[in-house]
Image (cartoon, rainbow, N blue to C red; front, side, top):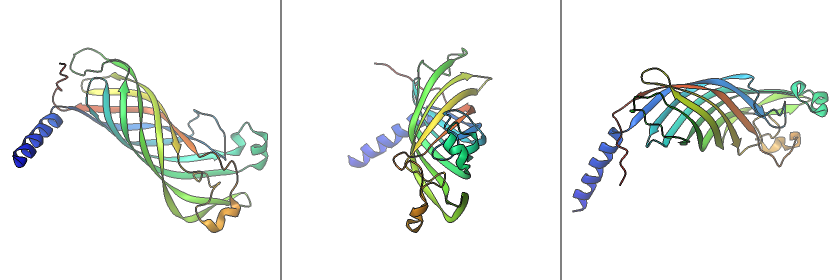
Length: 228
């Protein structure tokens, strides 16, 4: 009986997964940093961000989503509105790799098999994991610690997506990432021996923002959105 139950569940799982609509595509946009170095504008992309994205449309209103995005984060005190930062004159650059997964919720039904042109706003949130180089500042110069770290984060994105050409979906979104570190800009060294070089607001962690577009291709059989 136990083996029969496992077999039935396995078959149902295969059928459910096979009957969903999948999306795979690319992300292209820009990034900007919000922390202890540089400007504090919320949406001000200054570096290229590029990556890949996958979605599994579980229903007409929500999708499971995963992405991998590469970018350089850059901060220039000279671009800040704060006179103290302008006088300090620090600048940093740090390459990042972000892996994110979570759920996307649409404001309106997004059933790709209606044959109509569809457009809807959406929200995305989940969990991210970001790799970055460990750095610190000596005499106003960014210095590499010779190591890298990973940090968790919480992505929060708002966007609008629309059916584009046959099988293609175009989306525009802006997404902020709250990270669990204060070291992306070199203001908080990873090495405990370098803590005297720490500066800035130690009570605030770093943020960064991705602003861009996604273009995805849909495939898979028509899902059954059953209502009882």
